[in-house]
Length: 139
Image 1 (cartoon, rainbow, N blue to C red):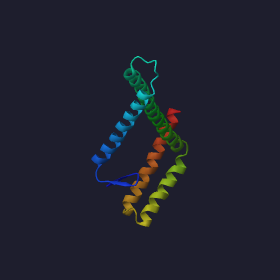
Image 2: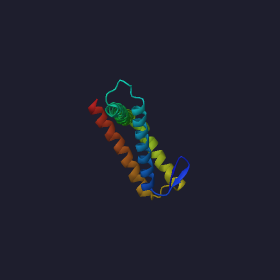
Image 3: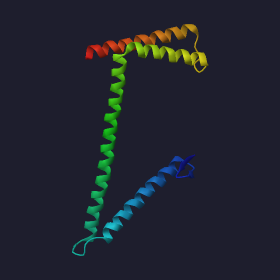
Image 4: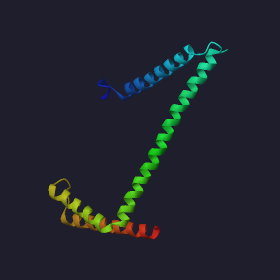
């Protein structure tokens, strides 16, 4: 069960109906406001209000698309910085990965035998140093 502004919504379909219904009501309200605020010198109030509302929607969709594009660029930049850190500091990363794996095993959060632990730890070290070599060759 989802919650929207403190109100329990019983299903995802009802949530979609509420969200899209709210968007349609907002769009209708914007159109009515544009229609009622059309200048008296306008020949066709319907066309004027339609153009104003279409420009308003274009600005909203343009902002959403620009925001999504910036989010993709920033996400890729974060991934690149992480790769650069691993490639530039292989000993720190492999040691911390081994320590983290060991802590997970000792705390009981990860169930591994000794052989599995050694194998995973060696794979972590090998993966980090492989990434370090790829980073070094790419630079």
